[in-house]
Image 1 (cartoon, rainbow, N blue to C red):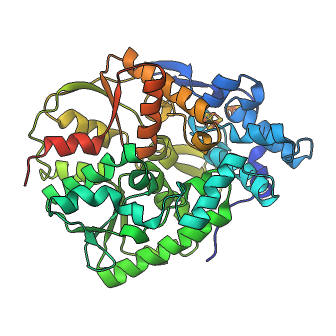
Image 2: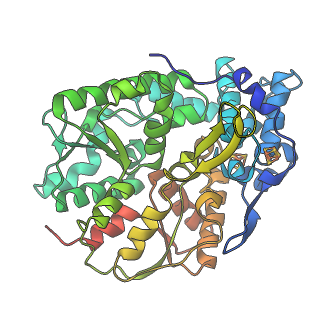
Image 3: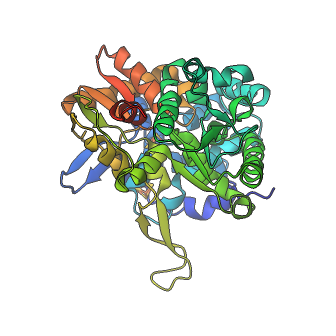
Length: 440
Ligand code: SF4
Ligand code: SF4
C-alpha cells in the first residue's frame, strides 16, 4: 500500500517559515471570554526555550536538518519526546507552516526511529507489545473482550462481526478494552446502542490496535502494518457483513482512522461507502433527530474537557494552492467543521439535572490532559502532573466532576485528580448518556 507520510526533509520548506516570534507559547483568544494562559505542557514543565511550544521544537528540526543537533544524543532525543503532540502551539501560530506543525514534530521522531535511536526505551516496550500482541498494553487477545462479560451475564450478547452481519461496527480501541479503569466506556457505549436498538457488532478478539500510538512516537512502519490490516478488514466487513458505519468512543482511534489513515493512497477505494464517526457525534445526530430520549436526571456540575484528538487535531486548513489569493502555499484560514467542540457540550447540557460550567481554556485553546504523544508511557509522572493541572482548572471553574470523550484522557485525568488529592471524578459522556436513557 502506498503512503504519503512526509519525511523531515520533505517538510523543510515549511520549517524555515517559522519567524521565532514566540506567539505559540501562550493561549490567546479575544473571546468572549478573553483567554490568556499557558498552552504548552512541555514548555511549562521544562522551561528551557527549546521545549517551549512550536518555536522551540521547530528550532530543533532546523538543528537536525543543518546537522548542528544530533538525534543520537540521548538528552536531545529525550527533548523531542517531551511533547504531548497536543497541537496547542499550532492553534496559536498564524504563519504558513501552521498546518504542518505537529507533522514536523512527528517527522523528527520518525527520523529518530528510522535511524535506530528512537523512540525512548519505555516507548520501545510499547512498540514491542504492538508487534507481539497487536495492542500497546501487552494484553493477550482473549482479554480484549473482558469488558463484555456483564452483557453475557445479562443475556444481552453483543454481535461478533466475524460471525454475524451488522450495519454498525463498534471499534472499541485498546484503552477501553484493556484498561480496567476505562472499561466503563465501551460498556456504556454498547449499553446505549442496545437501548436504542441499533444493529451493531464488534470485532471481538480479532480487533487490532488503530496504530495511533505508534504514529505519535514516530514508528511509521508499525503504524502502516496495523493501518493496512484495518483498512483491508474494514473493506471486507463492508463487503461481506454489510458494515456501513464505524463508530468509536476513543478520540485516538477516531483521529487515526479519520486522519492518519487518509495518508494511504488506497483510503478512498477501501473506505468507499463506509462512514467513520465518533460516538459523541453519532449520538448528537440522533439527539437532533429526536431519537435520543435523555429522560433520567443526572445531578451534578460538570465541566467538559476537549481531547486534542477530537478537537484541534481535526482542523482543516485552507491553503492557497495556486497563489490566486496570496501566494502559492499560503495558509488562508481553517475550518473547524470536523472538530467535536459543540456536539458533546450540547449533549451534556441536554441531560436533565446537569449543570455545565466552562474552564478557562477550551476548544482550540484546551489544555492537553498531558498524556498524549507517548508521554504517558515515556514520562508517566509528568503526564500525571499535567493532568493534575487540568483538574485544578476544572475545580477553579466550579465543577464537581469532569466529562470527556476519550478513554486515554479519562485514565490520565483520573490519575491527575488522585495525585492532587481532588475528589473530582472523570466521566465519559457515554456513561452519563447511558444513565439518562431509560431501559428499553
Ligand atoms: S511556530 Fe509560529 S507562532 Fe511559534 S515562533 Fe514560529 S512563527 Fe511564531
Ligand atoms: S504540541 Fe503541545 S506539548 Fe508539544 S510543543 Fe506544542 S503545545 Fe507544547
